[in-house]
Length: 296
Ligand SMILES: Nc1ncnc2c1ncn2[C@@H]1O[C@H](COP(=O)(O)OP(=O)(O)OP(=O)(O)O)[C@@H](O)[C@H]1O
Image (cartoon, helix red, strand yellow):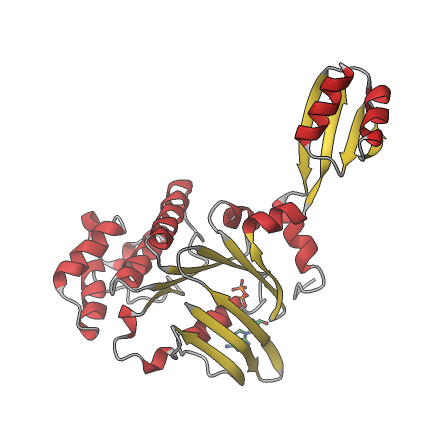
């Protein structure tokens, strides 16, 4: 479990994280969403003891990162995939991190395989694509078999196959009972990956909710096309719906698609279309974080 409590981080006079409080629970993937500069990386760095907060705490299973003698066994993180020594081979890089955490070479082979890098273990990192560096960063994160995992924008630079691979890996890790926190500024990607979302803007908490609830919150009514729109509109209103005419279609609110279908059936009116309308997830995200985008 990761517990962020009243966390505040400043750079000079700029406030990057502002009295932020949320908990990341085990057994699910939690998406950490926010526009550029919202404070996601700063928060994750604080969890890893790389930032000294000006206020509040960031704890892993009740203790700060620095209190763990073998931190890699407690939390695995991918922050900046580019920050690796290019002259080394992939295997040498992972082995070096393993040694400093008392982890044996068998596990090095295992994580290289897990990350799909077994075939390029002896190749120099300098020749790696961004996607391969992401995989390497993930291999290191998994090294200590930690109960807590954190990934900062892990899909950046990945091709669709790589994106799917990371998504499945995160879901599998969560299904094993681990705590998984993954940051992104792409709502669409989170919708298919995360069970829970924490949304931040300008360092402040905007939403802390299940993905399902977030999607429902932005549900917009149902588009209905029918053989006799006027008669159907009357029947739907009588059943409690709010109905607006939209050219040859109806925009129906406050009645779910199943009920609309039943009303139409009871009236003997053929339905031609019944489409639940959501704001697109990206629209929902823009709406949520409006006013908290840094560079507008
Ligand atoms: N080392 C630093 N020195 C000065 N300001 C910084 C530093 N690191 C971050 N900031 C500022 O703090 C704020 C939060 O940055 P942070 O990188 O945590 O946001 P983020 O949500 O991760 O953004 P992104 O999606 O762009 O990575 C931004 O305004 C950023 O410019």
